[in-house]
Image (cartoon, rainbow, N blue to C red; front, side, top):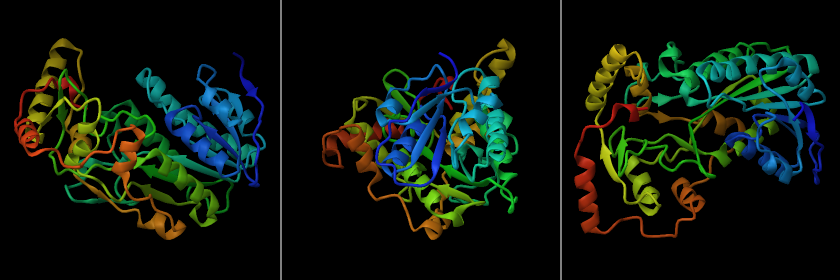
Length: 373
C-alpha cells in the first residue's frame, strides 16, 4: 500500500474552524482522540502506518493519510494545511531501537514539519513513565514540576524513547514568539475501552496474579476517554499553550478496590492474587540480574524499574482544572466495569470468600522474576 492519502474525508457536521492532524491515529490512544475530535466537530486527518488497521477510522469518516512518523517527508505531507497536531504516535512494540526511534525521530519530525507548514499548535501526549520514581517517596505528589527520569535507559526502550521525546517537546515551550505553540500532556496509566484489565495490577502466571505492591497502594489511572476530553479542552483554551499538564483520575482507587470492583467480577475472577512486597521483588530482581550476567540473556530488572511500579504516589491536576474548568467525571471504577460489560453486583464479596482471598493476598510465594515489570 503506497504512502499518501488513502481515504478522502467523508466527515459530516464539521463546525470547528481548526483542522487537526492526529499522529498514531490507529492506536489505542489515537483512535479515541480522533473519535472525540470528530464528535466535537473538528476536521480530522489521521496519520497512520501503511500496515495499520484503519477500519475504525474509516467508520468515523476522517481523512486517512498513510505514512511513517520516522520519515520527515511523510510528516510534512500529512501536516500540510493543518492548524493543529495532536502527537500521539509512540513506539509500543518491536525492537528497542525501533521503539526509541519512533518516539524521538517522530517528535523531531513533527516539530520540523509543523514549523515549515505553519501549524499553529501541537499537543504532545507524553506519559507518567518519564518521571523519576527513584527520587520520589511514598505519599509524594506527582506534579508538572516533579523531576524527570535521569537514567531512562535503565527502565527500558519505552521510557527511554518517551523521555527523550519529552525533552524535545519541552525545548519548544520557551519559544514564546514562535509557531507552533506546544502543550505537553502527561497522563497516568490509561485504561478502559478494551484495555487489559490486569494491567494496573500485574501479569498473571498460570492461576496466580502477582501484585507488585500492597492492597492499599493507590493506582494512578485515567480513562482513555478522559484523556481525549482533556485534549479537546486544551484546544478550546489558548491559555493552555506553552504549558505542561499532569492528568490522572483524582479518585486514585486502591488495589483492593480495583480488584473487588473489576477483577473479581470479570473472567479473571478465579485468579489467586498474591501481594509481593518490595523486599521480595528486590531480592528476585538481584537474583535475575546475576542469572542474566551468567547466561548473557534474561530479564533486565533493576531498582529503578521496580520503584516505577511500587512507588505509592499521589497526583494533583489542579493546574489543568484551573486553566480549563474541567476534571474527569466521577465513578472511574463503575465506568471500567461498564466497559467490561460486567453485570452490576455488590461491591463487597461474601464474608467466607473474602476470608479466603485475604489468605491468598496475605501470603507471599516465590514469583518468576520475568513477571516483574
